[in-house]
Length: 99
Image (cartoon, rainbow, N blue to C red; front, top):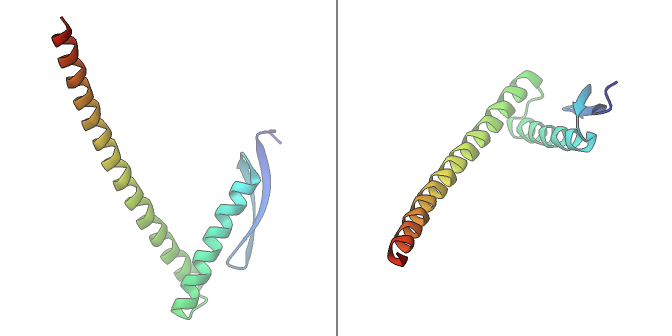
């Protein structure tokens, strides 16, 4: 096995999975734990153990979180671009006044 790839065994919603992961196994284990906790909470709220339904709802929840983070990142990029333009104008003004 490639030294950068590690075998990891995780359990999500009472199902065991053997994965091959690049990087630290602890990161994959942590992600699996997050998904397991989310699915368990969704199943508890719904009062169902239908794993397909719970998995789809967990995916929708995670997709919603991802979309919100993507929006935040786009807003931050816009703010950085605006500040960069402002600082560039200020530097141009300072350079022109120094001449």
